[in-house]
Length: 335
Ligand SMILES: Nc1ncnc2c1ncn2[C@@H]1O[C@H](COP(=O)(O)OP(=O)(O)OP(=O)(O)O)[C@@H](O)[C@H]1O
Image (cartoon, rainbow, N blue to C red; front, side):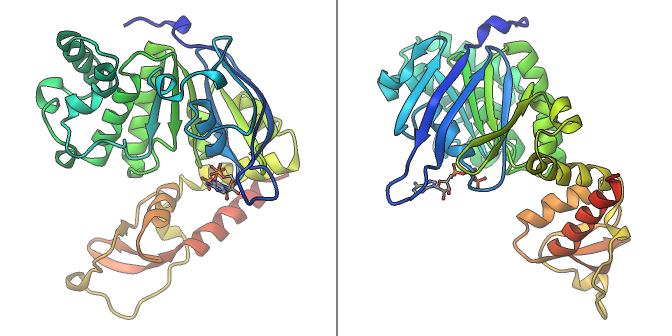
């Protein structure tokens, strides 16, 4: 597959609005946006600002209250939504695989609905598994339960690309995997995008991910009001408002902290915790970078995670402690 920037389509949102029943303010309030063909645009912003609602209106999983969506110049607000969704790839957190279908059947889902012949579907499935780094001979007949989280996520990406759609929507695609797998998937996503040239719209909570993957970043305030829409370099170097500076700043603070390890934080001491009584829940090695510990804490079933050095628990770490230090790191870095 060669680089093909023409493979994507321009997306234009015009005064796009969503008002949920019973809510006094619109979740998305007259959003205007132009996403050039073949670019990756990443939506970031505080929880509830309207990222997912905006994304899901593009394939009409959520129906707009008013406004227009043009893809490749065509107003898709009048198209049959089911047909439309076969032409827009959609990748969700965790991969969203059907548990009772094999990898090949999952990837071939949309081509089958589009009535491609079997040979063409089989060839396409193998081509895509190769693209996402899964050996087709090993993985095509496996079931989701026989795959790791990262492998399921790869299958999700392959499925999103199956019918060669000009547009790929990704909703927190790498949010369900461990930090190392996440980094690997992000790198692979850059390679894949360089090869397929789709127009990609992605929602993430991770500013670092937005900076890495986005040609442009859309920073939203509540109501999906645009705080800034610019390249990552621009957003980091010249945040348009205090809000943007604060929002991307906390990520930058974490990035700086990322070089330090968790044993440099104040851990809650515990009286006695020999190796034999290591807690059941997740543990972190003392050398784990703080940025990775954050992801572990956010997804942990417990409020504290034990930090272990040489098989012995040296203390407990909680989210408020880590967060307080991330903020402190930020302030120190400001002039
Ligand atoms: N089905 C719904 N009915 C009513 N209100 C909703 C519905 N879905 C979302 N909302 C509200 O609309 C607003 C935007 O939600 P949305 O999920 O788009 O935000 P988000 O930025 O993606 O949030 P998060 O980062 O937490 O996923 C929120 O205030 C939310 O409570």
